[in-house]
Image (cartoon, rainbow, N blue to C red; front, side, top):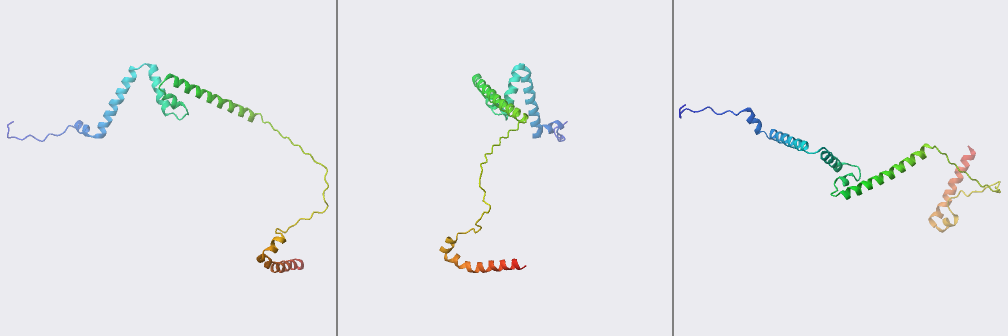
Length: 164
């Protein structure tokens, strides 16, 4: 080819187009990180993997006390948290079983003690059905002015009731 001839424009290879896409780049990056983690896990001992899994689970657990135990930096702190959890769980278990046993015993306790002394019961009982004291009404002039009208109304009601 001579220098004067122009070359056709270079077309991109399809694999080059995929590598330009950000989502594809992120997916490749994630896959590489996952492969790296897998290699690290294979190189660790079985007990080390179990410990890391338990710490990861414990740090996101919603069970009270377990996240504190998982995030503890010393063996003593872990032992203290284990002791606290065991004591609290033991108390819970004791109270639960005690309550369940009481419930399932179906006990019926009824104690009735009546001391009835002889009492003279009146043959006639007079009850005051008037809710207002007359002395309180007589002290208030406005209430006192209402009495004659109300008495007339009550008398009319009484007469209508007894006639009909």
